Image (cartoon, rainbow, N blue to C red):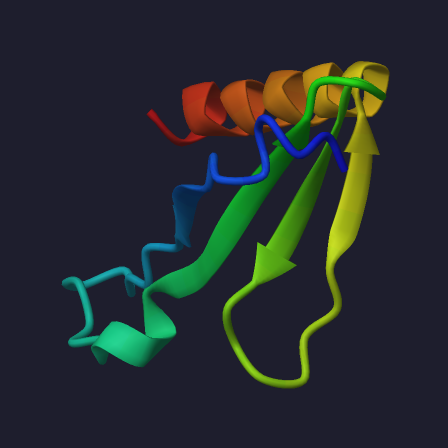
Length: 81
């Protein structure tokens, strides 16, 4: 990892909404999503997604796979809207 940007850590919270046909269900904060630390590496143009939760595995994304992931997330959000 490039030492000049190792201090850059952003948080991404992926949330899910749980509903029924009648009304939204009460959901605990733990069920709302997974918190990730995003560590960009400018040298290799990759990002490492590190789940904060114990027992989860980090995911390394290239620029191309990050763009695909963003497009997929955007598409799904549009479907939900």
